[in-house]
Amino acid sequence: MIDAGWLNVGSLILGLVAWIISIINHAGDKKQKNMKWIALSIISFSACAIAICLQIFYNLHLVKIGDWVALGDNAWCSCCFNSTCHCYHFIKCTYVVFKSG
Image 1 (cartoon, rainbow, N blue to C red):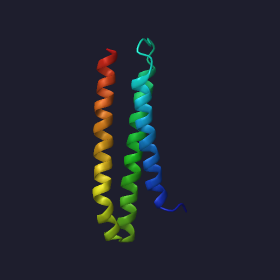
Image 2 (cartoon, rainbow, N blue to C red):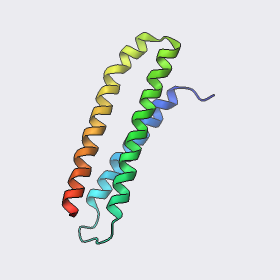
Image 3 (cartoon, rainbow, N blue to C red):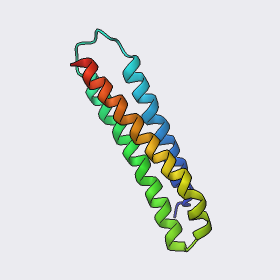
């Protein structure tokens, strides 16, 4: 079985991938006529959603093993990461949609 700590590592990596894809999407060719930005936006948002799911699974693991101290320590960081990730991607995807249309 894979150690539950890898859920945090996977969440961090997927969160960074989501941000990098979003930045690449924004910095792409402005005169590009094809709809590549739609695919990049969907991939970026999906990576963000999977990262948040991994955080939720890690919190579930902490509840199952009864590690309430670690859950309390992890709660603020998890909430901060999740809200930042969602807000950033919502604003970024909204900007890309309105910029292109």
